[in-house]
Each structure stands twice: as C-alpha cells, then as structure tokens.
Image (cartoon, one colour):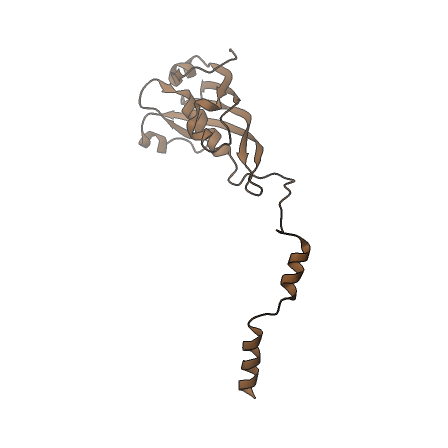
Length: 173
C-alpha cells in the first residue's frame, strides 16, 4: 500500500482478486463536477480504498474519502469550510441488469471495460456527501437594513388604507 496521488486508471476486478488496498490523495482541481459546487478548487482529499471479493464472489470496493472544502454559506454568502466524508461500499457490475441483482448492501459500480478511471468514482461519492445547504453555525446575518431611527419613522407613518377602513365603517351605518 502506497500513499501519494492515486492512479488515474485501475482494473477493479484484478485489484479485488489480489485484495489490494490503495491510499492516497485526490486533487479537488482534478474533479471538475465537484469543484463547480465549491468556492475554490484548491486542496486535496485523503482516500483509502480496499478491493476484495465477498462471500458471493462479487468484486467489491470499500473505503472512505475525507477532506475539507470551501462552499458558499447560504446565510451570509461568505465561504464556509465544510468537512466531507464519503463512504464507499460498491460492487462491480458489468450491466444494468446485473446491477439490479446485487445485494442491497452494495451500491453498483457499472464498468463497461476492465479498466476504469478512479477519480470520477471518488468524485461521485464526494458530491453525494456535500450538504444541500451549507452554512456557518455561528453566522451573523444582518437582519435589519438602515438604522433603528429609520425603522421607527416608518412605523409612525399613517397607514394609507386607514381611509378605506373609515369609508367601510361609514357605509355600514
């Protein structure tokens, strides 16, 4: 097992036969779909993957990816640091039909050839772990605009519809 940049392409079935473990880093800049949801594409995520065969002789990929990214706070629109944790529990399938018959404990990883690109798989799982609405826990939002005196003068102004209310009362009498 080595640590460093992950390989671009892998052969999951061979790695499962050899019960291989991969650990390394994945650059956020190399994952454009993930980066499009972030403030910046700088940084890396740490990835730890294990390939094996389970008791049903299925090729499986388990592990996790962990890191932190900057997203836009939906309260104050400033950058907020978000910790991402993606868990992998995938079983290799060659077709959609084969994927339908996998045990429910696995998510399918459909491959059309022996070799696949690893970063898109990691990117998919990381995107699923992003929060739908990122925000600071202690975000200080400006709730009133202008000073308090302006708000008071607006409260003291007469309601323009009060004349209509008086006319309605006069019609009833």
